[in-house]
Image (cartoon, rainbow, N blue to C red):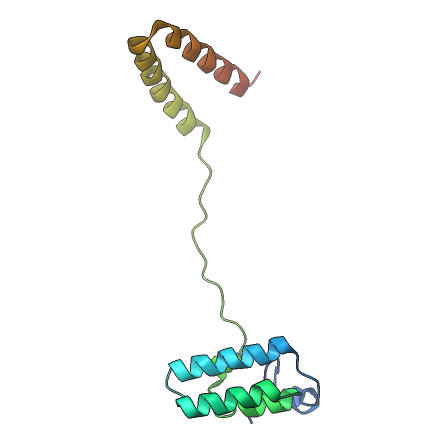
Length: 137
């Protein structure tokens, strides 16, 4: 007997089979049938027949019959696979931010000075305000 949606073992399959299946359970079974078709476990006719059976099924036992013969890894009986662990990006250190400011501010100030003298004063005031706000007392 192949486990139906939500079954966690053969002992739970007997009592669980009489419970009413939800629309979400039927959709999950149809997704499983589609995956089995794509991987070659079902023919087009079998997919149509089993999908029709899944759509009219009312209990988990009927849904389990629709997925009979499909490997457990496709039906989700083994449980969900572990999520891949990605690298966590570390926050930028204070020294890196300070060095970036030391490089970018003189470049911006030089560009402002060369383009227009008034821009130099404005950028100087912005840089002074930024440094004052970010520095510790």
